Length: 295
Image (cartoon, rainbow, N blue to C red; front, side, top):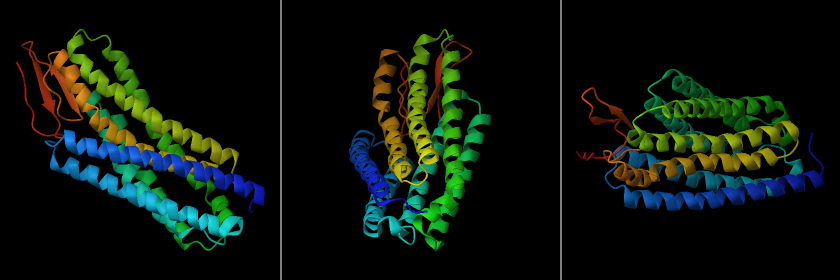
């Protein structure tokens, strides 16, 4: 059932706002990429390639989102089929966000030394990626109208957003609990840098979880509108923004590390542990470049 002309104009306006915010975040992402390549030239080659691929996928997201808005504006509420660029946009978003979510799940395991919940998050991420690919395929092959298509796949979209939210909640809750436990640690100088990494990971998951929750609320409340899709525009971009921000945060961690007389942190993931003889050692997990230690 298609909405009225007034409801369509309101929905299209929300899409425009979401697109503008998403494009602004894309500008921030480009600045973060420039900063990353200028400041972290010694990082591992695969990590540099990962950042470059993330940027290129976001360029593709921006192009397909712009073309999708053009198709929406041209077809109006009586459009006979979903925009062809919608499926392409979903595929690009999934190819970009799923590895980033896997990165945060891996970081969760490295920081806490517990792998059960990170494995569960990885399963959620994989299931969500497969589900989105199926939805993208259906959007390209389905011949029904735009609004009939949304009604037919509403619960699929809700399930996919719920799975993404569950992954964010698990990561946030687990890291928050570990941060609370670490407050009892007597090695205050050691835990400062590690706790900063944990806290930054929590902030990233809270940011993505907030937009996922907002998209779920709008989708359930206003089914026959596209307000929820405007939030998805922002959500898809926020994953890349927080990922690059977490990589660039390492410069601040190095300063904190120096003030605490720790070994320099040159990778986005590093776990510092006390040894039996009372010295402090670093355990490298291969996400950065060369490591330089200080006595």
